[in-house]
Length: 255
Image (cartoon, rainbow, N blue to C red; front, top):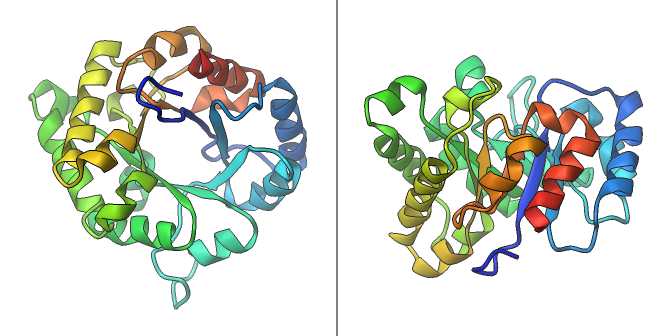
């Protein structure tokens, strides 16, 4: 637990990697390596095609299996989309929403996220909402302006009593997949600001809200990042493709 009683979460985002045939072996190996005592919550966010295999391999464990996107409607004429109800039906327990790669390559909007986040909560899924500024916004001193817009817009339709059930992942876009990492104190400052934004609606929810850091997190830098007071875990990209690396990051969060 963090000093404020929040349970750390370490989530591995496979992005467009992984096949059905390798997923079971990955999950089994990860479970062997994890200290699965419930101190740290661990998740794998896998492609749609690998979700059923991951759920089956994780059955009976605490490992949370999450999708990487979903549509805000339960059903409808939305060719190529997957709903929260469909995810919940096969045992998925979480979903990543608003990742910067979805925003950049698939036209994901803050307005759509305003509907997706409450839809995920209604379906019983843990929403992991991704927010973060570009390099240009950072250099222009607009990090807080960008975060304010993203957080307030995406959480607008979430009832106040359910705010603490959302996980927010702060992922500065310039640090994703680049090897660059925000200075720990700078990341902590941005994440404290995110918590304060939620505190404008509910101080109680802000105290319980989990805020993760994402952006080139790996075993070598995880401990320093996770030691910051407002960091409640990590959303891990490339390093999560190796179960040993993800388990090592989870151990850093446990310490």
